[in-house]
Length: 292
Image 1 (cartoon, one colour):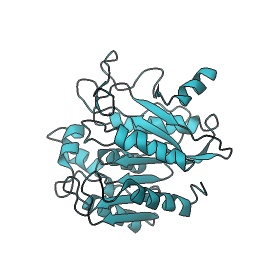
Image 2 (image 1 turned 30 degrees about the vertical axis):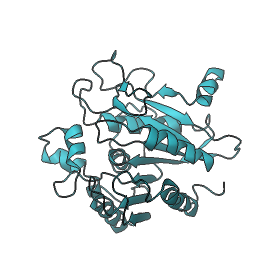
Image 3 (image 1 turned 90 degrees about the vertical axis):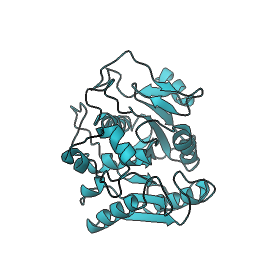
């Protein structure tokens, strides 16, 4: 326990699968990133980097964060670490997920590897809720761009458990936060680069359908916060609109915020503080956080 506490204080990664990564081929392979690991280009050892707020006695809300990168890379600093720190400032525990990037050379079935890691992350946080002073009924998932596709996949396919789960821990996120997300893989609005990287260049119609998450919402889909820019030229804003409409048809509470400008990835407009404040207000209105 003392060793684990020391790890958490330094915000290092802990393995998602201490007993071995399922669906893995090259177990001795190493992850690859740029010089400071702010971007990963290959991930074969999925892990969580844990950020726990200090000085809070009540059970915390937790958010698992999935960075984007088209399923080809993880922009894990900009869309992971910095966001986790912002959540800590409002009293929310954050877990940055270093998920596997799909690769036929390192995965037996690359199409499910990222989803396995998202489900395992939810399972790990829920199983460790008492240890980390987290409310097991307030565990959400957040994703940016292709990370938004992964997050929305975890919220629409939680009944298809892809990991060993003998205790039958729920892998359903309690809420979703989707930032300029890839939602669909169809030809009209889907992000084809993400689709090709996850499913290959000649995917079956069934695979495209399964991972077009707007087609798989129901009344059990978690409440969601979506934010996008209307001038996004990489991932069409229609992804967020179609998903919101599907949630709305099923009576799932959702907020959709569309900015006229911002492109893909946002920048000066809207600022991080602008859209994150909207997200914070949504979390407060749904009682996932109270005051900070």
